[in-house]
Image 1 (cartoon, chains in turn yellow, purple):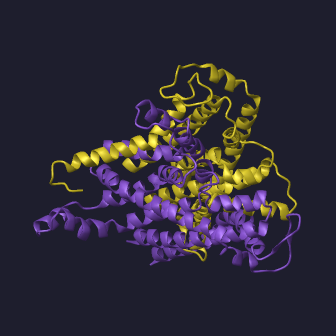
Image 2 (tube, chains in turn orange, green):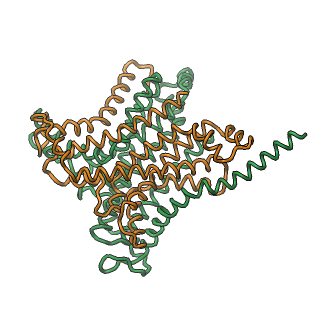
Image 3 (cartoon, one colour):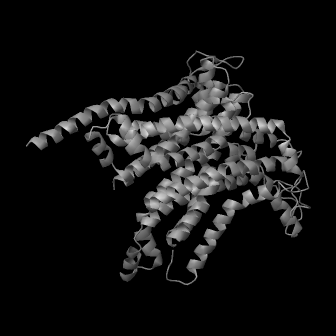
Length: 265
Length: 295
């Protein structure tokens, strides 16, 4: 902050480095202890390194089941979020209508409210309506808080591109569908992809709401959560954790690239 | 003349068609969010005023007793703890994020992108896994204790895990990016010539910062603080994994009342209270960001 003194930039550099290390070092620990030969404690440095836990993890059928469920839920919830988010963003951007502010507020609220509140709300509604736990109840919970990532990305893109192209297309007699397909969609394609990737990551990582809507079913994060109370074979949990980190890390990097590219234009 | 009428006609047609489209566009999301979000929340609101059944159900007998119960010492402590821990988290995040955001904003474009990504990526990767990592670091047989023992800096294990301190570390770690990003967005737009102007007019670093930079970055500070405070006060996973029963927060209290105690009305009451606290913060945030948009 104090640009004139010589030492200040070094302090700033140090603070930044410290914060970035702080943000990344726990993930490094997770990765390191996926390879340790020690299955109960976390001796530092690890007494030895091994790949055996990867083999053990791969043979855990309960893990695979949880993974499969997480993947299916994330894909469908993302699909729902893409449709709902894009439509809502188009409406809010296009005109000032009654309830416009309410819609943007409603879209953001599910992610702003603590997951535990959303969780018990859904669980209470299910109980009241006699709706049994199912694959569908998990998806409903997820899509609700995934809409916001798509909505935000699409609306940010709309703000940059403006309304003139759409107006021109409509004035020239194109139908709404034609306008959407040939004018709007190409413009927002990368925003959709970025929003979709983030929605996927959000769904794939969710724990709290899911514990209230899943019943006995286990998504991968819930599987990990259930493993935390068991002290045996800790490295197996780490192996799965590394796997989960990778699965969400890749879409995030892609989403980041997509939004970076367009802002650099 | 003729072309003007056609243009007006086209505009009118466009408007009418858009009105029809609007309903089609808003309805699905509105329908979904009302049915699967607002209706369930309303049920919670209603339950918060009802009576608990003998075997856990909800009896349709109206009462305000659930709200009166919030003042009981046991529950009040949990609320106070949540508020204090969230406040500490917010202040520490602010203290660390400001210099970091400032530093990033002063770098060349290439570096800026990379540094911002380094801040964003952990925030988007699995929260549960990252919190669990802290449990591995802080537990009695964990990384930190073993390193300190190995270096002979301590004689015996330190009780680090299951303390309010562990929860604060986890919260700071989890929500720090929420503070860095709005501050960075604010500082990136900041005109540094203003600081030079302040210096030229005789202000030292401290006063130039206080009178020029701080007021101009206030929207970022407020936005960041609220974005950190909201998830911190409503935390569940962090306090569950790192705090245990010794550092229970509102979120954990709700879960216990709902699942173990099977007292749905009281769990609803706590939820509504938490929601009110969060909504106040969200409303402030909304005001500030929309004002910033208009400016």
